[in-house]
Image (tube, rainbow, N blue to C red; front, side):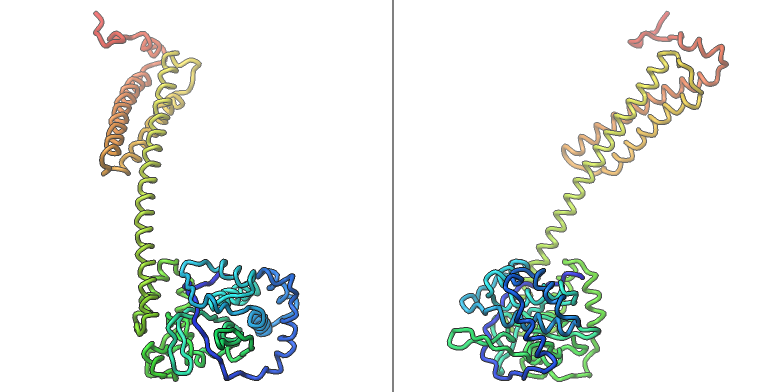
Length: 406
């Protein structure tokens, strides 16, 4: 199961929710059993998921149990409701919720999402802003989406857990935010990215403010299923770019959206800068690898030539077939060719790098001349009869210092 987590944001203050659904009878036993999860199994998502798997078989019952346990056991952290941390990791959020049994909306959502994934249910964390009693809130909120079969439903375990009154949090289950229809939740929950509305005719930021959230088929059709599939195939940098484009397209209506968009653009720029640095590092590594490889091939060619000369000084004894003798120089030439190819791949260097490459190229050229001299001698050697070859080892036109002999 893939790991899904969108942008990291904190949550908003939520007021008393007066509309509460009656507990649906089909979940009565599920709710009861979910709240019986032992405290010893409540400290890790692995243990919670094991309990869920052992006691609930369908995705709906698993989701209900996850929602009920979180809403019933995690206290809302009123004192830190404004403590927004853009850089807190998902695991940190989950750990805080489980260790302290307390958190803000990002902790509730992260925990719900993590248990869903470990229970085999596809899930996303969604960030955006909300509206209550006709008033649009001024700090961000986080909730979740999860799949049941081929359909997507919305889950807000924070709002489902209770309410704040007089600066204090009160537990009170509200299952209106369990498995809500996306077309219903959009009336109160607006994602920053309209992809996560799960609607074929997304609601714009302006429409959300104006309470115009009803289905409007006059808009262009948006295939969110295919778009989510494309999202899954993108890397993090590509996701950021398309996310920014969708946010701008849906309208930058308030400071929350503006701040979110600016945060994303900074991340895009940071990613771009990191990519540039990484590309330059890769180029430098490739240059170093090529230069070192050229040096290795050059040194190997020298060893090959030295082996040939040593064998020639021994008058090709013990005897070997001509093809084997020729292969000694061929191997040297082959290694020298590889050295030149590697050096050619790193032309255009500057400063010390250019000097090093130039020096190595001159060394290769010098060795090429030396190999040609040996090859010319060997060609003459091969052209002679066996009786005349021996005499070639005694011929000397010059001294070792290049002075002609009389």
